[in-house]
Image 1 (cartoon, one colour):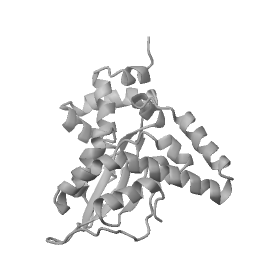
Image 2: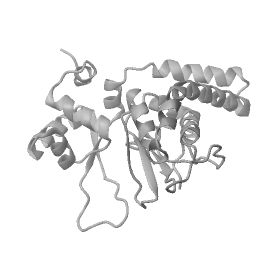
Image 3: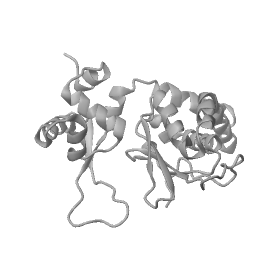
Image 4: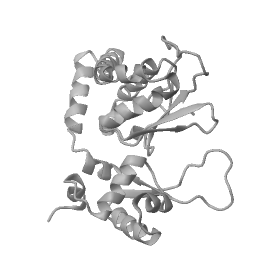
Length: 246
């Protein structure tokens, strides 16, 4: 008999698997959000969440509140654990981390080693996002973040966009990251990805949170483009990619 993680990895369409998949696709979610998405009662969702927590597939977290907080304590949000993510992403994390470690050592270690890993990370993301460019550039400036999210979702990143809390731009949210475990050791992967987003969108972007740093979602702030204005073609402002700002 397989483990709960095996059941998720093999795509068993149980209600419990649907709950876990919804959290993967949408990020940390409350009982009410899951119930509405899946057409279940809150009691049913809680029952499945209790089982998933016991199986270490999901864990409860304090929900982040942007702006002013209303009365009462915010509802808990449930996020996938590293074990839960592994159930959906059977990757060769150790092999990848060992390979990057070897690259750093072979290049001489220290700053030279870090530079070598950075060069690899940039080449990797350039190859991946090169296929996105036509799709993003074909979209109107105000729709480019969504076009990028659609392209990322097609590659398994479960990406969405939403308005930024200050109303001055958008947040590009990646609810899944296939290389999160490796990026914990090599933040150059996150940094290169954010640089690539900046060039694709033609504007400086800011990484606000990453799954690799323990956040539930990789979140990137994309400033709004004034109506009628074209985006910059050479963004040069410093990026905070891969590191949560203070």
